[in-house]
Image: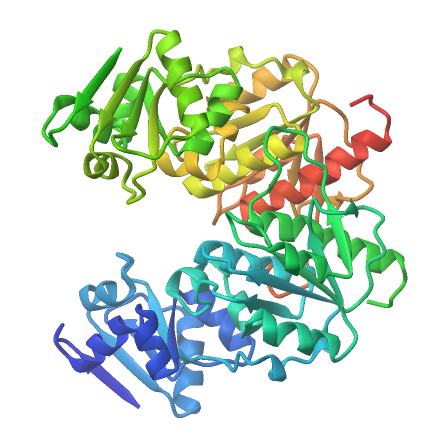
Length: 271
Length: 271
């Protein structure tokens, strides 16, 4: 279905704007993704928006046409609106912008297939949506299966996290669970839990990583609770040569993930 | 000198607030750093604020006392104010907060001693102050000498960059230069320029890194200009197993920096 919207007070405009707010996202079970690149990544991953919003009078673009065709063919809705209204929805000035409304994914642990990938990233109380999106992006790059969010993390469906993921929100699985839910789930199957830690840790190079390897990073300012670190199968430490004794959480996760990728490859685990 | 300020309209309050703005920082040659941890890192690195601002009626804290004593002994100014005014200055609600005004450092290339460290990070057109601060923090962790900012980067003295650096703004050297200034400076002495690249690149593990190694990362959305990549001594590529062909700039720099640290160590360059 196609519609044209020309008024700021249109209920659909209000609905789209409301998706910038977590409470409304939860109620609707929907989230907003912006930009042609992100929406094309989604389409190429087989995920289409329920609703595609585009500016009137835009320059023709084959990727926009492909997106529009796919949404219509799937029974979705295509909305054309003024560049001003689109800018209001997306919070950007670029009149080329497109935005899409997607259904939130199932984020239960039960929906994860741990055998699907040799590496999974796990973040505990990660508060910064940019860090969260960056971890999704890193997960995509290292061939991780997805990101498991433990305890009270930023919302993976926020506009900031989706943007920072550079499309990885559509390629990585995302799960949300408390520690009390996560640990029994993990121990219910194969899986090595590894934390970057200073407690009773071994050098991160040469440590005996094993797939599926779950790489756990902690909160940006407090790190991991001691109890969580001690529940890990492996605690590893990266050299710290400066005054600080820590790295940004997303950076630590990435450095460790690349080491695990390399170790598993050389161990010939066939991945 | 000690002073108490109790009015929002006090010129010192206006001055402190103005340092959130780049134009005012440049004019004054000063920047603002917030939080006891950051200011303590600065003090332990031998750097004291010209002006220390603290909330009245705060709980006693030995690190605050140490800071206050050091600033007074160095002839600096200590200002006590209400929690409300301090919150207004720092943009935070925490009445424990302290803030300091520091002189901006010399950021000329000429002030760098390339022999001082085996690794230097170099960022081109890095626009996000959080990424910039994260790179400083990573540089501190890997034992880099500092961060060289090429072309039009975010301001390293912004409150956001200083905060994300977690104190590394005080331990890492920072230089700012155009590419036209940087390249002749680099070629005027020993130094290997390495970029993460997809063009004519070799695997980042096993590449022949040599100290002093300058690790170049590009702009968050555009990457490095081809001309810059081709001017590098070494182009290396990290495995990309997902849909995306890139990492967050600060993440890519960190993964590469840790690889260089490890390679130089094993090559026995004595660092």
